Image (cartoon, rainbow, N blue to C red; front, side):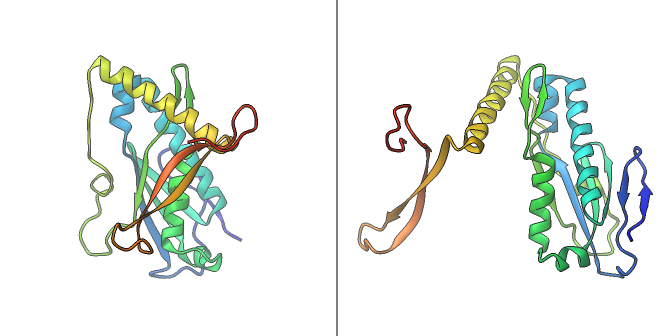
Length: 208
């Protein structure tokens, strides 16, 4: 049975990698909140800290479901996942990365100023002898803006929340259409996507 272990930076109780995991069997993942500076600029320091703590809580919950550990440094998070357990479940490294990003960032955080999405990125650091710097492994982009920019950023968050909610409820869907070459009509050059209303109020056909 996996044992519980309390790690640094808070009373996170997560399961350590299984005892049989040897060298090369642990998957290391560095994740970050890429829009932390923007959230702080648009909503203020206190709300940004609550979002960061919320992401960390989600990271701990993820590790409680998996054989892993997580710690953090600011808006950067470092995971150790048991590769053997992941592969036994039929998951590739890319699957684990996608699962981490989904667990940390798919759902918005609700605040007095509306829903806030944390933009999460995750990667597997290079396996070399260089000293590991968690912050360098994450995003170092910092953009802040004027009051007008902050207002627009918060408004865009609410639009994203409404659109994603409509997609979850099945009210909207993405329709894909073939775009063919003018010279070779059987050759598909790319697919064009459009956001489509699933049904009209009168029960008509889907509308773009």
